Length: 486
Image (cartoon, rainbow, N blue to C red; front, side, top):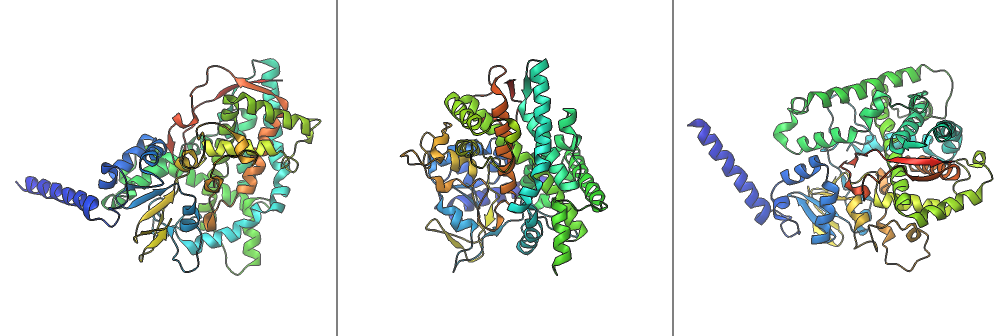
């Protein structure tokens, strides 16, 4: 009898919440589908299926530039939202990150640079900024070029003695993680040399799935205290392995006597020169973020560009001609002199538009008093974000949004493309700190590949569109076999 009463109360509570969310909630006037407005569970199911990016695009196609995608969350694809949500506006409150996506695991754990604590985030940025300046990228270039040289050597061997077929997704993961490992910890993972993924690489490439699962659980308050029990054992083990190995690598790097132009070196210099410090625990936690953020997103962007070029023969022909006309040998192709390749830069932008490395935005939360966004009042406590994939793929922002057209970024076409909405590295105080370094890697790797090899599909393309892959914040990339011909 008691169980029946409890069940009846639960049903009554759920029904009352749905009625409130649909008819009485402060966001009731914002458009969106019934089930998404009624309960957060619809959003969670979409995220866990891996197709939230496509569902959001469908919703924006139906309901317009702002959609209510949960009882307390709005999704935007209007370029004005970049300024209104992510930048500091005179006379307006600060719209800060919410705790759902990057909640601390334990009370004594420090916040990371990805967390919601604004003062800590600003301090971390100041400490790490020296590793991502123009001078730093120049100093780091020999390290980057060293690993790209090694990858190209492996590719020449495969092309000269075999059929030249490689899974480019795997190799891009190898080289970007090796570069990130060297610049993070003073040593690579030897994945490029071995042609095999280090266990850490395999875990990191699926790291977004764990973050998405944690965020889904954190949306339901009763489950937050049970998080360690709600997460599958394998997920917990992989997360702990990632953190423990990062801690070990940081401590080994701190024992090195040589001064290196790397990420930890920047923090050590900052700690020596400034009154404020980054503690050892904070450094260990943040390096577990940098090793992933500095590699997975870059490899994804490059793979997406190659996919777009292979689907667009004219663009492939034009960018290859540009690169081969600019250099007399592949040794001339360095980080410093690839910035002049305008069409290659346009191709990279177009690749990131069609397949942004981060497909959805980490939501901000409006201050208690509320805030004006895109000319309309949003009540306090509302999660708000520009979600990159639907924003970059919407016909409201781009002509022929599903087609690979690099020319749109050259300013040579009379189009209605809204390039202001294209911000793959975000804007404002949380703008990607490593974007200069990412650009250096992307230009160098693509220029070296396209200068040296003619690239074609090894077999029928595995998908018609990059978006057919699953996403969990980041792309769950499928193998992409291409043929490299000298």
